[in-house]
Length: 152
Image 1 (spheres, rainbow, N blue to C red):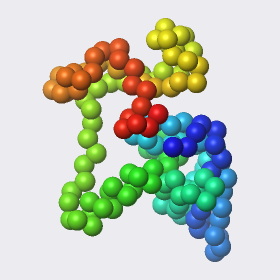
Image 2: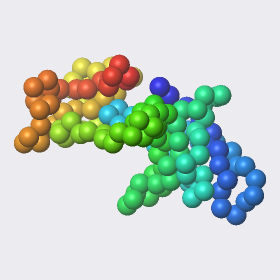
Image 3: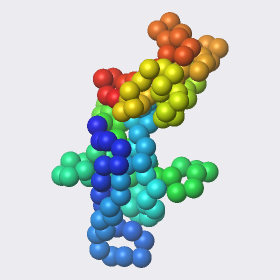
């Protein structure tokens, strides 16, 4: 799993050029539940869908933007792409489910202190459950989720 502020390279053929382009950026945010990474890099329309590298490893696919967001670009993790393509190959429908919970980021130092988290720890706070959610069988309000599937 990449770290915050880790350098990455996005490869593609942006509009207005006829040669491959390699753009450098850093990871500004990691979403613990969706495992997406975001950056402020202006991913050009024809770079969207291109590979994103850290060192020599492909960590995901560039995604141009979040609708309604200013300069928010995403990297869809390689594992998510692998799962999607495997299900398409099998002819299965792929669904990415929701836990049915509302979350709040734990990046605020005051919240980290209140919940006894170390400064280097990040996570999300469970703030409420949707009415029909089965997550309340394994989670409680004010639980802090520090990792997903063993990944911080």
